[in-house]
Length: 453
Image (tube, one colour):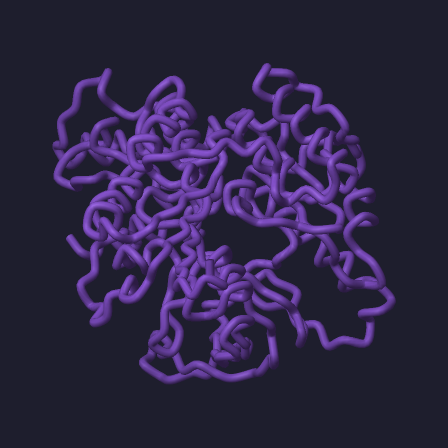
């Protein structure tokens, strides 16, 4: 299309995918869907924005929307009303696979069929492609087709994919000459954090890395040159740091912060900060110690966050395939990230995540605390309407472990002070924790909303 002198704008559902599209097509020819729709994140919530002075579709002939079936239905409505209906002469092309992992804002039995019907009403024509564009060979295409068929048939054994059963096999597959290679996909963020720490510890202890000056900062082992991924929405030096933005540590420095003691005297508190460079823009940021916890090692990502990614010619290890909430759609997304089926292994050894029994105990404890607080505050409720363990599990499943207010991922953390720990958030704080009045949100967004009330 560009060869025909048509201006093309490619749109990705995430910053990471938009970055890949910009690298392929140029900075001016790709952006995120939120930016195109003039939406932004404010206090953890997607809102309409009228701050853009220029129309991003000015002079554009063709818009290509990637991963259309992974978007919430509300977002599909925005595409219909803000793009298709407003610009009838604009050619809009959408790509995607209905057999998709998604954070759905509707509750229907056949969610894939529902999405097919919704997208069919938005576009006049559809083309069914029987091949996966990322696969390296016809053999890989055929094997992925077999995998997809087995998953749709409800089979637990995955054809053509081998299992591994020891943690040392994960480390051996992914660490070469002291460097990480490939990608590890997990369903739970908790698993991702645990496995990433194992990988980082093995990298630090590798003979090739013994000469490096390692520092222990906010639970992370860091050195200059370390790659990091941002995991929460926050601001640094007046700029928004987006979820999944990637950085490299350029320097680690010591500084002091002044605090007053109980006698009103100023005391110096030693701190360790990091200087990081944005992998995409080259922008330099100074990050103080308390904000280091906003970052994570890049070795593991959640399955849902990997949508749209391709990991070519490298080892891929899949975790949590026996998880309580994982669906056939989630498994297919994970299995279809590689361009070669033979590069994939499924970890089938001892569980590395928090047990389902412990999750239920955590949820039950939090609900009990909310019940006591509601009763003390005089917020009345009917017993059958109050949130329970089953409701929390169903909502976490529906939201794919994502915060209801933003794109951040929730942890099943025992530490309630953790910003990414899941919480039961009331839509209206005047009323009790009833099912109709609650969503699952990360602790940070929950607190941010309370501060606005």
